[in-house]
Length: 327
Image (cartoon, rainbow, N blue to C red; front, top):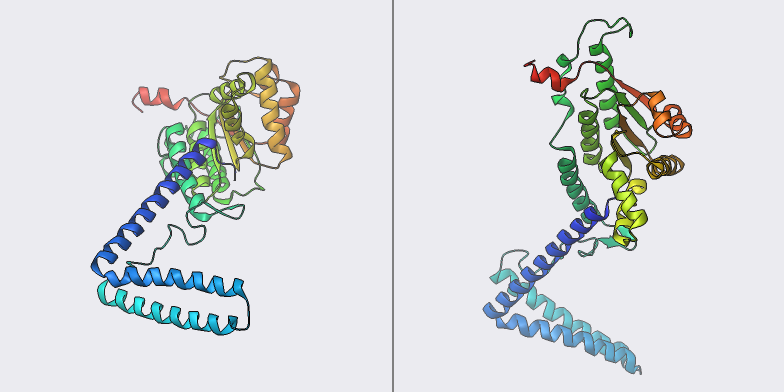
């Protein structure tokens, strides 16, 4: 999963802190136990010595190796039994377990080369925090108000804006609930103030809650970061932009509001093409219509967006203006 470098850094820092806290707690418990029952300290020392004796017997070889190992094993078992009895008599269950923060990875975050579930969960938590900061709140589908959209039939559409938006809401809900790596890419198109950003944030939160890595970025911020990575020579900046192609779901909000230019066009094509080639879903929201997309960027980009993305229409009157009028 392609979590951003910032998310990974925060998640790893939290895991390292939790691991250090657990190790400190285990040490404190052990010191407390030794002070309360000094015999425990002696037993632990003798157990370590028995392991050293076993190793010496193996390396020494000779005819008495088996007998020596048997003697060490019996002594070890007797010490373990005595230790267990002392702990049961003097301490509550689990007090001296020396349990790691995670049984699977020991608190390192990886089992072999695979990210452990403990680190994945921390990444999901940090990603949710990041999405909340970027999208501006805790949007959910239940907060989407269809009453802002007229139920009168639009002669040009042959259907009411509310009916269109009911369909749009159903599409977004289903997309979020059924999202997987085979999901289509979506193109949210429509004028300003019709709910594109809101529903994008709802999808982002819902998909992230299901364990997928999601990057939500405004077009302006995305292109700024990509330009910095391209021309500054900053390796950290370059690594940070890798999230745009590596994440499970990329959401680009407000395409068309950024400063235009050759770099922007090339960067946009790169993102669209790379994600299409790797079969990773993308959601793009824009106020631009099909003609404007071609004029602002290129015929090739417009063709990719209009031909390969499922278009989701947003129609109606600017909700912000309706609210200002006291609707």
